[in-house]
Image (cartoon, rainbow, N blue to C red; front, side, top):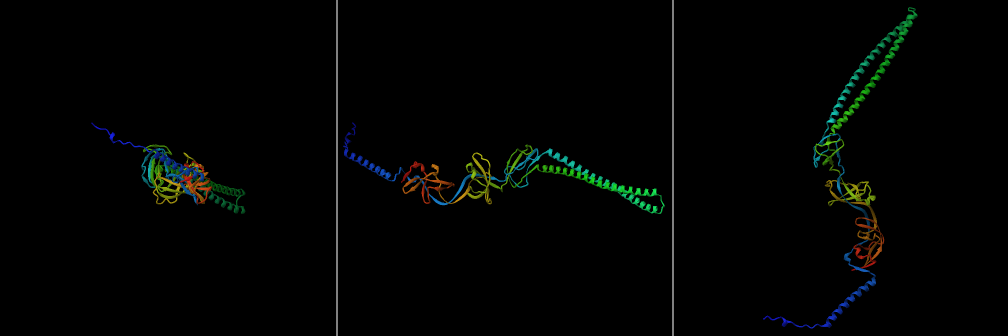
Length: 419
């Protein structure tokens, strides 16, 4: 038979007076702590207590406040020309995207039978006009020769009539001829003079007329030469050449595609001319200005630039700007490379400022100033802001310590005890 454990049990008698004194002592300690806290709170007027470690503080200082805008963007080619077809035809793409090309290198070829045929026709017409000009020149020389012959003959006749007139003067003086014959010699002399004068005028008029005709033929020939030169230029432009040293960006059409005049073919990226494209919030658009300094961070590499252009339109709440590098030598830049930037708006010298935090949680009108173990809520007025600092216009002085973060724990109390 197995025995139970009743023989091992022992009756313990409790002490009511000891338990009562323990509860009484604990209560007195709690009341003492509560009274001390109430006494302290009543003396300094603090509405609540907060740990210092839960708050972030900063000291007001005087110095130069640099107003700036933080932005991000990417590297873009400042010179990335798009090449277009200058005539209808089928395109043969020679260079591929990513290929390095030199200025003047043939990148694509357009086959345009219509343009080539037009050039051949105009060249034939030009040759015909050249023949006409030569023929007109020969005819002019022939006509001038004939006119000169007529004038020379009139000159000879004039000389002969003048000689007969002098003979008549001698003979009439000696009464060797009749008055009628004398007058006839004088009439012949006048006729010879008129024929010579008319012949001379005819020669001059013919020369002017021929010069005018040759000038018109020359102008028509020159006009046709310009037409042919322009067509030759268009035919030469069927070879699409690289305008700059760089790389092929993208094909904007398919191989052996039928193109219309003015259709885009491909892009060429000039690797020697890069700029930074930054997207700035539209709220800062009115503060931007050309020529402002910009600090750029290219993956840890710092450099500087100048704001060179500002877009006149807003897209998706942002304004696009372009920055030109002050010293691009030595920078390893790539198309669409990401970067961050700081646009420097202005420098405010000798201003009272404090590090940025949550001071704007009350609209920037109140701040907690630390005085020993107390934080007092005081009215302030803030001014210009930068990325790291904010200007203090009223409510503080150099050396004051303010709570700049964690103020939500203070619950807008007028006075808070710190421990």
